[in-house]
Each structure stands twice: as C-alpha cells, then as structure tokens.
Length: 604
Image 1 (spheres, rainbow, N blue to C red):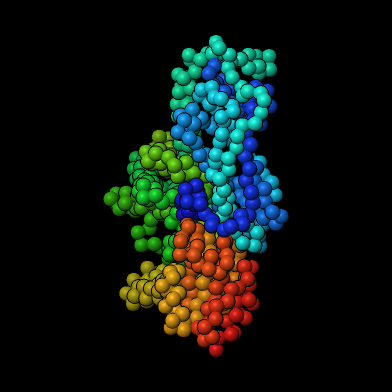
Image 2 (image 1 turned 90 degrees about the vertical axis):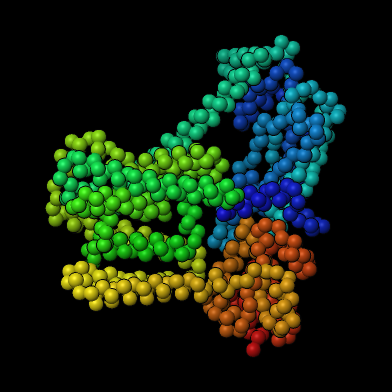
C-alpha cells in the first residue's frame, strides 16, 4: 500500500499543492542553457544526438533546490518511508506539441537516519538536470519554461512543500541543430555513426518495439529463475523434499511418478494463478499490491505462523496430518488429490519468501498489462515446480534415487527445524506490526497448540474419540486466545479523527490524545514505537483517555485545518486534551514514553 500512497501523493502534490504555509522550507530555482554536441559525449548518461533531425534542437534546464541547515528532502525514488521529490513541467499548448524530455539526471542521494529508521535523500543544495528536445526551431528570446516542484522537507518534523518555478533562456549560443541534409554524424572512437532523417521514424519505432519485447521477455526469465531458486528457500525446500521422499517410498512405477508430478505441478500453478488474478483485480481498483501483499494483515501472518508451526511438529513426528498433504496415498483418486493439495501447500508456504531475481519480475507487475502479470506469475510457478516437471520426462532419474529407509525419517525430522525457524521469523514480523508483548501471548497459544497436536498424535494410535475431542478443544482454545489478543489491542483502540468526534469529547469532558501522523514521516514512525508501548497503552486505558489517529498521508482538509489551528504546517503533532481541566496541550515533536506518562499523571 505504500506505493499506492506515494503515487497518489505525487498526483496531489502536482495538482493541489501539499502545503499552505507562508514560510516555505527550501527554495527552488530554474535556469536554461544550451546543450552542445560535446556535452553529448561527456554526458554521464551518454545521451545520443542521433535521433535529432535537421529542424530540431536541444537545450538544457537545471533545477536547484536549496534547503536550510538541518533539513533534508528525498530523491525522486523512495524505498520505504518518505515522499519523493517530484518535478511536473507546465507546458503551454504550443510547447505540448513541440517539447519533450530526452533525459533527466538526479544526483545520487546520501544516507541519513532518524532513530532506528534510515533513508536516503539530499541536504543543503541539490541540482537536477533535464535535457529537452524541440521538434521545431524556436525563437530563443521567447523560450520560457515553468514547472511545479514538490518535496518533503524533514528535520524533527516533516513539511510537504510545493513551489512553481519559471525560467527564461539566457545564453548567446544557439542550442544544437542538425545540418540541412538531415544527417547527424557523431564520432565514437574511430567510428562514425550516420543516421538519415528519412529512416529515423521507422528505426525509432522498431527500436522501441524490440526494446519493449526484450524487456518483457527478461521479466519472464527472471520470474522463472526466481521460482527455481525459491526451491532452496528454508520455507519451501523441506516441503518439496518430503514430497520427493513420498514418491520414493510409495510410487510403484514411472507412470505413477508421472501422474503424481503432474498433479503436484497443477497445484502449484493453481495458487499462483489465483494470486495473479487477485492482484489484477485489486490493481484494476487502483490498489498497488504485489507478491506478499497478504503479509500486511496480522491475521494472515498468524495463520501462516500456525501453519509452519504445525508442519514443524508434523515433521518431528508428533502427529500425522489427516490428509497427509506431503505424501502419496495408496488409492489413485486420493493420491491425485493429495499431490494437488501438496502443490497448493508448497505455494502457500512459499509466500513469505523472496528469492533473487524475483524482485525485478514481480516489481513489473505493479504497472504491467494484466496478461503480462498473469504470465509472470505463471513462469514463477513453473520455476518453483521445475524439478517435478522434469521427472515425467526423465523416468530414468527415478532409478538413481536413494532407496527408502530409516534415513528418510531422520531427514524429515531435521526439516522440522527450518519450519520452526520460519515461525520465529513470522512472530518477529507480527510483533513489528502489532505490539511488543504479543509474542508472549502467541508463545502461550503455540504451547497449547503443541499440546493439542500431541493429544491428536495419541488419538491416531489409539483411535479413542475422547482424545480427538480433547485435541480439538485445546486447539480451539489456542486459536481463540490468539485472536482475542489481536483484537483487544491497538487495532480496536484507535479512532479515526473527525472534527465532530473531537467536539463531542470536549463537550462531554472526555480526555483524548490525538496523533497526527503520515506514512511518509520518518519522525512519526520513530515516535509510534513509544506511543504504542505496552505500558503506555495500559496507562491510556486506565486513565480512560480516548486515542484518535489523524492520518495526513493523503491530504485531508480537516487535518490541515487542525494543524493550522495549532500553528503547525507539518507532522508529527500530538494533542492532549484534559477533560478534567478543559485544557489542551501540545506534546513535543520528539516524544518519549516518559513524556506521555508524565502528561497522563495530570489525570486523576
């Protein structure tokens, strides 16, 4: 969702402006200059003039953003927290028909950190270069450009800024033009490259088409390689290995192996296809989601945590899963279903993992055509299933597999440890998304779940129904205890800010605490760890203080008005209203647990 917020913020910053403060943090200026043929050779990005015809010209624009000491902005690409600096050119109707941007050059951002959170951006003075092409000769004395520039200026607070800059061409030498024959010659070492004007259009189209095709095919290749490497990930390799062991143990012929492999591959591809369709549907509704989007939900993380934990207990031999998803049944029908479900399970347990090359391919699905997105996920699934795709075509490989024996049980038990390690990692993710002390509740729930698995294992041997009932009751208590701890905490305690809610609480004498925050505010994220600390939340609850969150990630007129009311134009801002004294106070922008607890002591 962060990409969605960032995308909308860029649009808002270019159309509405993101701040109304009188004294802007930072200043932007724009200058225009010629672009000589020599610059094409010395330019860092090796801009070629070959595509410029006789009646066209180039010129350069430099945008400079200057900041006060102690402030920083972000680059045009943000990974995680922050808001990218955006430059939107405002062309006249004539310029829209004649001008285009050939190249833009941003300086490499420098790293910075606030608390435990780090990022990259610019400080003091930053210059961004743009190269423009005009499709017709223009009168330099009339050359004027205008752009809307938006950035997020941060120190202890973060303030979105927007400024419109203008520039008039200043220079004596004309921009680069082509000769009258429509031929541009450029030296490259000892070679000369000659491009004829009449062939430029068709060549350009062919290059663009070929480049697009090669790029798309590279995404498919990266997806396949990523899926192949995914087999070696700790959350996937044990499941695939156990499936292979079951083939060794139960399959009687190459035909049997071929049948089980086909259904196993279909199970893998089916889940990948479902994932791709879900992503396509959500993207059509303007949600920017991709691989692992479901891990943004704590409930989903708990489900996967429990699944990996149970698989670990199963590998240790505490019990056998009812349908035995990772094995092959003796009956043909049930063996096909088992192999298909085993393939589905393999894909599900692969979702917390990301292999090399996957990032490039899956990143393309954010903007790709739905068919391309579907094919990328298909190739990812084919890569994951590739070892089992090979089995039907190389039946002789079966003869070289090791014979069944006690070693298989020992290896299976060993694979229980990666499952447990994945559970620990998921618990860490869950803690980061919820609250620090949830790990104690989850560990207690997992202990109950392990007890349920132990009782279920006894039932499988004795077949006494009361043991099965006991296992179900203990497992139900474990799941109920987990869900209750998720629901009772932070998700339920925060209310969404509205001016009506604030007025209602003030009229009734209800104390409240307002957290005005934004997803792109790095200081806000550092402070949130103190606000949602267990002892702080407990004190809020004990003092009966209502918690209100005002999310300014996307511009909101009510929240902007609230900021202006308290003389602020950026976030974070923390407002505490004492219902007993009817007084409102502002807390520091760098907040700590002790600051909040001290303020709460004012209440009886």
